[in-house]
Image (cartoon, rainbow, N blue to C red; front, side, top):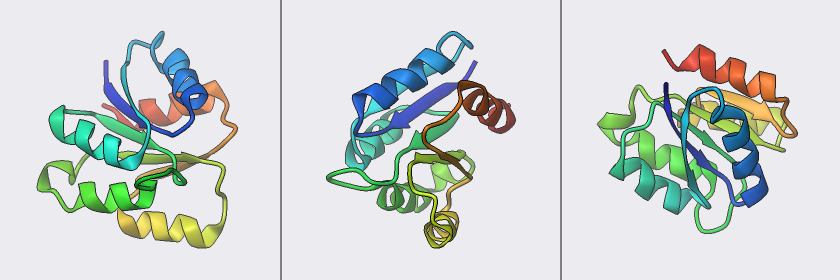
Length: 120
């Protein structure tokens, strides 16, 4: 199935994503902040990136802007998974290149549906 990178400063959220996507056949790599996520994304090929917005070192918006500046990430879907639900922040994320938005707490079937839609 898909190679997915999850970027979140919460180990429990990363674990939950792995518990939902792993049994569905996806390989899930983890990063604890945007800087680590950017380094992992550059070192491997991913079909999808799921990132939090608010993280130390480098936030999700900064990471998306950095990745979208690289031609190899033009077609890689990047989804925010965050507690943030403000429309202005969603617009900023879309402008930065985010493909979608899931608000925490999330339902496992919601995450699986988004992944199925974005990963062919």
